[in-house]
Image 1 (cartoon, rainbow, N blue to C red):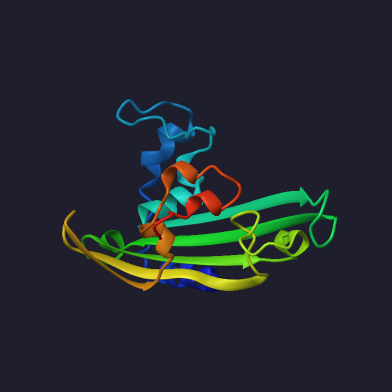
Image 2 (cartoon, helix red, strand yellow; image 1 turned 45 degrees about the horizontal axis):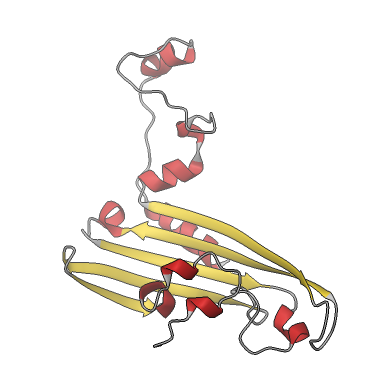
Length: 188
């Protein structure tokens, strides 16, 4: 709901896109190719003009929606021997403030997490978590930050609610593990 509000508010301040004269589109509508333009179809064969995500990106906005799911069964030991399916719904909105407001080197990120259902670690009986999405049930504004580069590629300021593991203590070689244990640096 928060992300939807941000998208709608952002769209309300965007300039209106005016259509060109009808005769300019006529050759393309009739099936003729315009030698001065590249193919408008993307990888999926969809017309780029009808893709709302491409239009949002042109306006300086990028919307990401991701659903992650894990299924596991405690087959021996643990607290309870049963199967558990977990899901994490992640919605993020990136705003390039250079495109939206002319603020060069500045951007905003908002991300919402929803984690419904029970946790596998309740059945296993551990405290570390069995997968990296094995978090308490809930809904939260996961991240909301403003980033501005005071000196391009040398000095930046980033303010807001951030996930520290996105910036610090990142163990790149552990990114593909299901369990989050290898992702923690031993010197953390």
